[in-house]
Amino acid sequence: MIKKRIIPCLDVKDGVVVKGIQFKGLREIGDPVELAKRYNALGADELVFLDISATQTGNALMLDVISKTAKELFIPMTIGGGLKSIEDISAVLNAGADKVSLNSAALSNPDLINETSEKFGAQCICIAIDAKWDEDKQDWFCYTHGGKQRTDIRTIDWIKEVERRGAGELLVTSMDYDGMQQGFDHKLLSIIQKAVTIPIIASGGAGSAEDFISLFLETDVSAGLAASIFHDQDVSIQQVKDLCDSKGVPVRHV
Amino acid sequence: MIAIVDYGLGNIANLTNALTYLGYEVKVTHDVEELEQADQIILPGVGHFKDAMTRLKELDLIPELNKLKETKPFIGICLGMQLLFEHSEEGNVDGLNFLPGQVRKMTCQLPVPHLGWNKLDASNVSLNEDVYFIHSYKVHTEENVVAKATYEDDVVAIVQKDNIIGIQFHPEKSGDKGLQILDQALKGGYIK
Image 1 (spheres, rainbow over the protein chains, first blue to last red):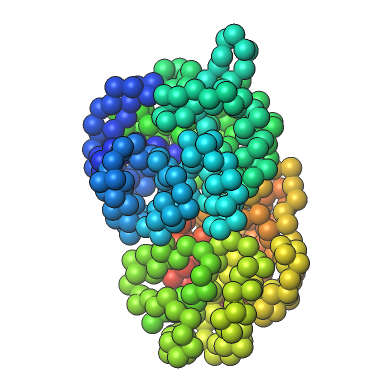
Image 2 (image 1 turned 120 degrees about the vertical axis):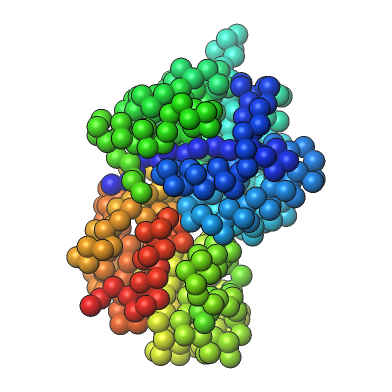
């Protein structure tokens, strides 16, 4: 039976792991390679690095982080943040990433999804979606640039389009729930999960091990992603997995 | 020395990393002389079946691979495993035909690609570990199956016929246990 994946996310700025609260107010956490090794030993099923550097020097440091991590860790690694072209994507894959996560670049240039999927295979294209509920319009809309810019694209339309264009996976962040640590956005995730056939990584809102159990029991998503609760050591990956065992949610053990 | 067949498809950085970590000397090459000097051959691959066969033909590697598979451990990984079989629906083209079987698109209620950690089921119990899969097509064969996984239906996960081994999942991405399974393939395989 396929296992539900527990994925720590590491936001990396200029080669250092940081994490924001609701996309604002960054704090420094530590060295990405060391953190990656720690999470691997603790049973992370996969790692997501989001490069939030705004400079070329920062992006170059990210390639170094990927290449160092890939020499020591043998679990899947997804890289996102600031990838704009086939050349950018090729560089991170060559450095040792297994998947790339595209958000802003895919929204501004959707053909990039087709091109990347054809060149590298659908399995390495994860489309990241930052979705926020609009009370007036009664629907979710996609945001870009780390949640700073709103688009007029409805999330539900976009996910169907990216699947059609060749995405292999979705990483869905609920901006309404992100950083609140009160559980995942089951409503959004269930609607998305029913609209596509590709696997979904749920993100935004994990505050406890129980939140992962509710996520997996109440939706059919494939994976749960979190940052703060793992970085702050409020909850360990092992605790989440032990609780999954006791509730009959299939997980992998190291 | 292990030769990883370089035909321009797929990300071989991580396979190279894993083999280096295991202590092997690795060469990524499509040079016939270097391939013949190798102790083991790995045929990697990520991407489209038809593109892979086209590239192998353009590089005129198919006669050479036929020769190599007679004499040394020959390991196909992921798409590299699928290429070992007779034919694929992906692009509707013939494969290398080293092993009997067909490659077909996965059809099931569960999400496709089959992506994530899934447990192997083998009579060789040392293989019964969680390993990392990512694929949308799968091999249909009744012969030479060493390990399967279950994803609604059976998924052929490892095949072996003498010195020819196929691994559908990514042992280089399956943690320490994946590295052990990869090492075992290079040391003769899974059939006692």
